[in-house]
Image (cartoon, rainbow, N blue to C red; front, side, top):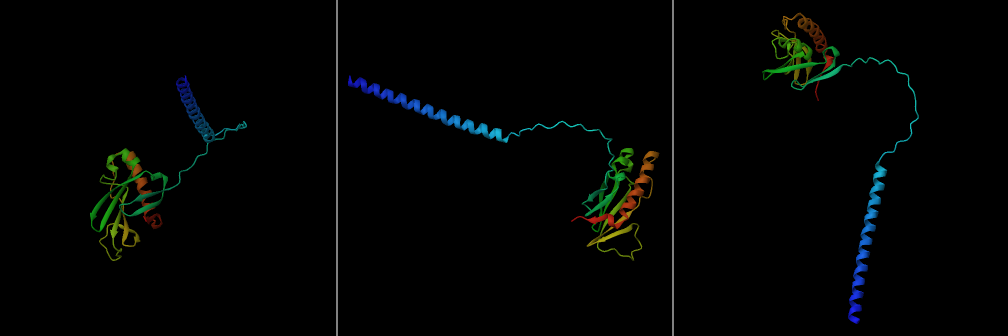
Length: 195
């Protein structure tokens, strides 16, 4: 009988150990669940009751878009104070020589009226040139207008020589935008070098 009791005692010990292991695993699992639940509650924002208020609707205010800055990295400059009437500027760059790069300007609104008025067309709203070196006041063969000197280069402006379209609406817009663009770029304070 002693063998039987030893087997019974060994079986009881194994059962008790198994129960202890299951209990410990359950306790650890419960603690982990509680900690995660508390962390989730702490990270969830709580909403406080907001007192109900009434507001009287007001008429919407008209905001005038402010002038913008327009960068022309190929020329190393940016245009400041671009009026809202031409803030949809676009341009195409041509490299005329190792000493001159030009950007022909137009607007998206003008190009939409007539593709011939786009910056890749024959006539645009005007052109800015980046000329290498220092402006020479004695150079009488110039067909562009000097605008501003920078270290190592100077900027010139060329006015369009003809109408860009046979479409009256496009040509009216072209004339008005060309005047606005010329006024913008002929003021040296509106052109600065990109740092």
